Image 1 (cartoon, rainbow, N blue to C red):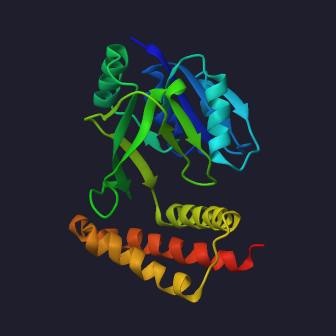
Image 2 (tube, rainbow, N blue to C red):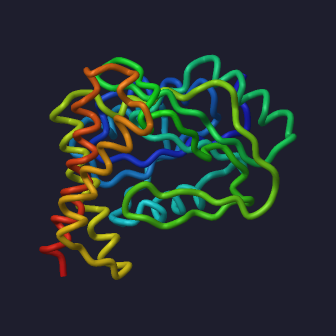
Length: 247
């Protein structure tokens, strides 16, 4: 049985695992809203298959896109997920229970990240995010990349079951994503008045790799994840390198 819950997603050429993602969302919610950035692949065709309500936005700010989805949602309870995330049955059951219980106003979802089809558990890949909440209890923090939510009232807790995140599906896809993130992050830092430097371009990437693979014990997942942590180091380098050319 579905509950009074709106599923919210932002898309842009996101058809890779969108079918699986929306299928998991459709079983749980009574409304799906997609805010799309003029996708040219099969994203919209797949979205219509699940009878999602689709709105087009040219906004660069992801927070403003989420705000559009909030405005269009008919329910107070919102579940936000990305197009590369899937809700397993165990998490769906838990979400139904907590929404119906009404004990809390917001819930953090723990993540199980996957890299090249295998789960990774260390090096910054074990985290939680505020994704399930009453929309009248949160504000959206604007951002060009990795927008977030902040509770303004009510109580929160963390769910037990994890959402599956398939962010790193192949090396070309992963490095393309990191390049896009780096450019967005560079623009965001420029807007905030931050400056780049020799130290940031060459030393921050080294620190990033050390922090993920050594300090946060990414090595425990195995040497096969080295390209992932080198990718984060590359993204750090690209962010401050791109800032040289932004005005």
